[in-house]
Image (tube, rainbow, N blue to C red; front, side, top):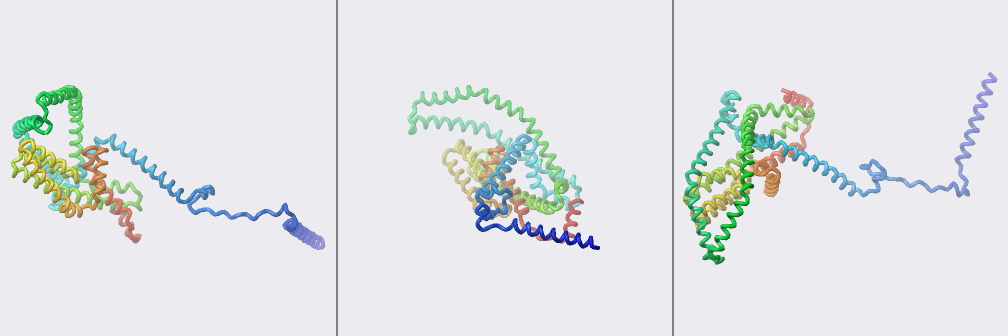
Length: 415
């Protein structure tokens, strides 16, 4: 017992001694200058930085740098995507045309399905009727062109003679030798570039197989898009996480509705343009009224610029065949139709289908021409319309849904 008490006493004394030592070490003499260190300055770090060095960089510069490298990444990915699409353009272009045709013909297939026809039969009938309409139109255009080509050639020769007379008697006052020299220069240029023209013809013949392959791909793709489009879309949606399927499916449905509305509105506007210009050509007895109207119809699928370019061809034909007065009248008819389209048809019909600013349309068409030529100009505007609808639908705030609604949506997508 005494030994226990002695140990406790010793432990107590040892503890007091350690406390005295620690207190002595922590006490600082007032006259000791070497121990008078300055108080530490507190450092502040921004919540968006992960390093103390970043606090020395202005906040605006860090934000600009963050935007810059993200834009660089997006630009590189976009460039790679464009190059990849350009590499497989022989497949991408027919698929894009097939999507446009499917959006145009889908209502007819839906109507036949309501009559209890099998999906394959309904799609086949609609596709055959569409091919028949296109083939009949092309046959009529080619026949009229072949029948009127000799007369147009004679009128063109007479027009060239009038130009020669005007060059001699007009304000230029050229003599006959100068006119003949200009014609001879043109002939020499054609002879010098004959090899290039021949090479172009050979290249065109070589691409005939690609055109036929693309046409077959368009037909098969359109058939399966019309018959199994919903199944294909559901398969693609199921590749994404469950939490994103509802939003993606909703955006896809809205984008498809926008594409269908755009194509149908474009067909209606193109038909009205072609009818107006075609009637003017028939009244003025300009040759090839139906082929020129068909050209205006096809050109109207490129908004703003397509109908204007095709109308210029009609004015040129009128100039060659009928002279300046009739050409000016045709030009007035083309301008009138364009004004009606721009101020009445586009806001009334196209504005309801898709709301895109004209500046965006012009930029999209120019970019499409640079990237893919005529096909790019044809696909640019519907692509912008679809992306506009899809992005807006994906970015909108979706209301909270109960858990049972989420389960039902996922099950429906798996069906």
